[in-house]
Image (cartoon, rainbow, N blue to C red; front, side, top):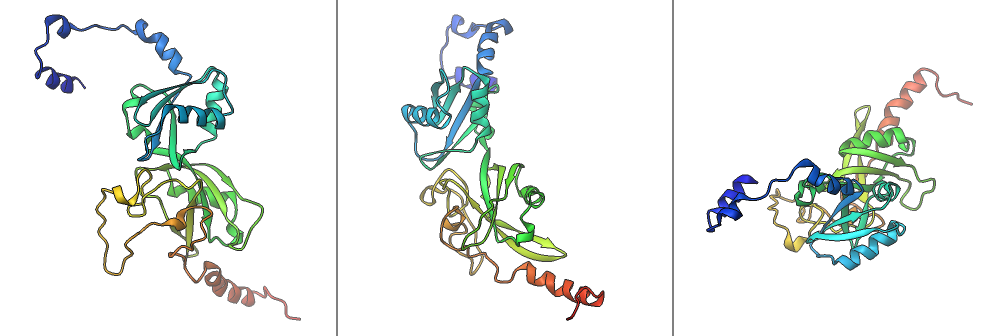
Length: 276
């Protein structure tokens, strides 16, 4: 920061009074620091620039109309949310993620210089549905293990019902959104692999070319080198939760078949099956 100022000063003929500046003491900023303890800073990760009124109306509604919530604009798609009570601030944090106009609103507790940082908003909470799991893998233990694909796992939910597409689990994870969204992963049990699919809730805007949240295909600056016979779009609408498009990555043969091939002969040898 000091180096940048020095370079800027060299381009202007500043007076001695301008150059001397003002020194602040710790006591001078204590009141502001105390106020910021009840502050969240949010950045909207997208190409569409939101307006202050729209953000204020949206956050007031989804956060349950907190008493005396003050919303200020700090820059393009960067906002400060000042709460009157700690419980309201914690509610906004604990119920993440937040999506406004199909764009992710990443909110973080205030820290020194966070409003100028983009890296501070690279980690975000996302709800991820996990599909193509054998039903005996639908447990929180498995969910937290699968969550190793992400920065951290906050919660695992096993929905009680199913549907034509089968059953799934949901993971609330902290995800590095500066990287391409994970389309899924290969999970092995006894050396036998199965492809597990991820789909993301709330239909965030992300690029089908590079898989990163915050921009579309037309404005993608990433150069993607693909090999012969690879798809032009490596990511797609099948990654959106609720989309009826089937994933092109889904394997036709499940791990269940592979497991049974090994387990059943062993049970027969041990007398595991009784013949009538």
